[in-house]
Image (tube, rainbow, N blue to C red; front, side, top):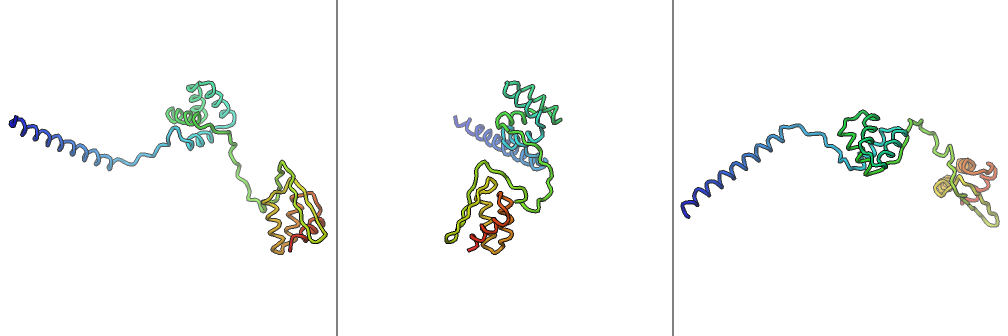
Length: 190
């Protein structure tokens, strides 16, 4: 029994040495290789968003119709033809689109910077009522182009002393005249 102990210890030391040498060799090889570009997770929402952005509205509709019908191969073919990407990238994109459905978003056109964000008022589905009073005088403005944020900006302008800009903004976001707007703003500037 003792005669076997020495050869077993030698064999264990040799095995440990070989393992250390292999590990050191593989680490050296990893350092000399250039870093690979990190690939997005095929099931990630970011990949789905990027893939959906490459499709026009008709391609997007066809692709999701095929995904809904369970025709993955046909969906991959549609994506491949639409984007010209490789088969593996198309497969990953379709898998991500199936896992994280994306609504169609038309590409945003380059817009000229607007001189004033209030230039074209947005219409809301509700009517906003703004009421100002001083003493016995009360004025009310009701409009579906006003909301808390816009009215807050108008009040800030009025309180800072820029009553003309406040009245102009109020007429832009309501259907009142400039005279009525000035009367309303005069009640706010206290």
